[in-house]
Length: 448
Ligand code: FES
Ligand SMILES: [Fe+2]
Image (tube, rainbow, N blue to C red):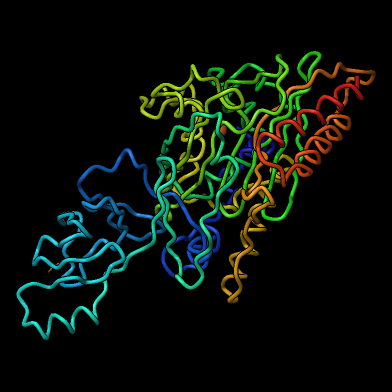
């Protein structure tokens, strides 16, 4: 056997060296890390209301161990896991009318961490302890079945952000969570990777969403303020289908529907089928916490089943055998299969990854700004009183004219569609739907 023949065939396993060093600046999320500090300047969902009963629960967010509980007056507390007396876990604590009492020696803390009682001490010592000792606690907001917290410096706490999608009146918003055994950025990358819907969700295993996803289409990326948007524009017969994936820095994500649109039926201004945050648990685990949106402008109500949100989130239900996961992989398989923390130096980003590259660049810039003592850029509230969002899908009847390579035309249409959405930023939802709907109809008439 001629050794040279092998190298000519490209067997480069030995020669191809891989880096073992992840991009720590973007992937380390624990306390006092640059990325962790940046993320701690924002509100994040941490738990589902429905998962919390009368007992405290432990959770980990941004690498910190915490206990969440609801006291008997109904107030939520999110506190450091360990009691400041001698470190017993408050998951075994007793919920009181106000706050929680440690199981070990009965120290009683309010939901803001104030020490209310340290039994068994002389009165003057107990008073001094109350002044000196605090249990670490974070502010909490409960909103339509999701429990949010702000884990940063109190002096820098922003207003709780209300995106327009959190106020959709004609949508059934179903809270759900999706665990991923990998770093947060791997999960988040997928939102700016429209191409994966044509392969992972369509042509590799079973057709997980509607059939139209199998077409690759034109991809355009938009950067606007703290938004990064990926628009996938597909030709489907006589129609043009726009699907907008959305990231609002640092970790708010939306996308078009999974089941409501396949490009064959006209659809004027569908809104996102999920409203979701990618929340780091620690460097190697992530939780997506979200609402699945069902209704005329979201996914069809018949998908509002126990499995529906799982299918919308990942293309498949979460609990499957290894063989099932191999035969029809979903987002968990794609992202977790990269390893717990993927090494960016080993990637080869191409033009369809432009959204991912943009996101990483913006994240790095924001992380460094916070390190330099600046406030991070935040989404601003429009005149409607809400933060506008753009994720969703629209199908217009625009027959093919002339050149079958219409990538330029599709790209121009995508730009026009995004521009009309931006023009509607200050409108309330009903006005916005009317305005964008009329503009889309005009666009259809103009191009037919
Ligand atoms: S360890 Fe909590 S009261 Fe002693
Ligand atoms: Fe996906």
